[in-house]
Length: 352
Image (cartoon, rainbow, N blue to C red; front, side, top):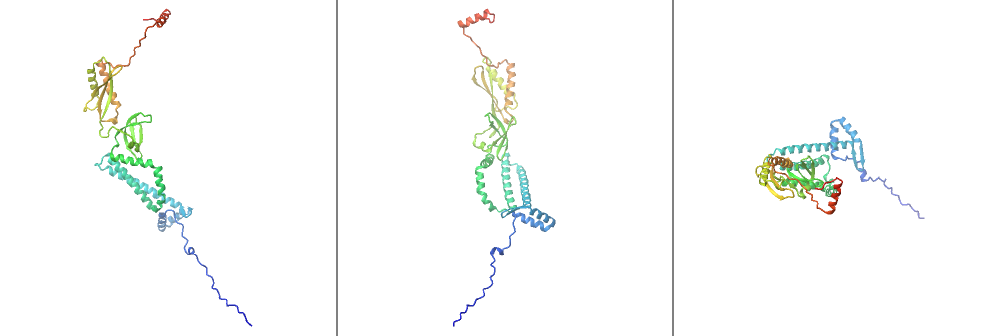
């Protein structure tokens, strides 16, 4: 008789729970959105418990967005760092501008160009210093470089173009503060003004009636500009004068020269000259050519002074200043004669 024996059951070892890899790692605390805040928080908390508790309270008021955590303490620290960087950059740029102005070997245009380049360099350095103080990794900005480049290409194209144009204008000295240029208003009326300031975006031009035009730097580079003081501040101006056909032309010319020489702002060299321009309908027309070297003080007042003086000189020497006169000649006809006869009978008109 065969006895079946059950196979010996081998005891299975007690199963040990398999610990996952992430269960062995310690729970990582949430980090602040700004890396520099953690170091400031630890340094201040170790020195003063009261301040540390206040920081803890501020740090407890936070907003979490995924893995990013922004607390009220983070916002305060970031605001303080940004303000400190801005104030420091403003102070350094101001000291730099004062230092540039002490270089007497540089003219006004070179000083202004050096100030602008120094200001750009200071603010660029302040930007990178602020990035470093906040603990922001510069590689993270590579994500936004493409979008920033598109923003410059489309939205800020004119701004950067005007900035570069202003620097070029200062480098070639074609337009500089103090120059007198001709400008036109929206109605197309041309006048002249003096350049007061070349800014980052536009050039400030002030006219004689204290109107200030802000002309974009690019416009002064791509358009024709009439600069009255580019190579010299001497400007020749014209004063038109008309005299009667019955006047003594030689005496009239002498009086015109006398009137021009009597004005203090008109230069003695080159001397004023008088040209006969044309035989007009009612007068013989002359033009007085004279030179001034201060166009920023105006040209209309010089023309007015010459004409006022000439008025009295012509009066004293009996030289007539003509004005338009019209004579009407009526041709005789039978119908017109009958009309005059009828009006004469009524006593309304007398035929002469």
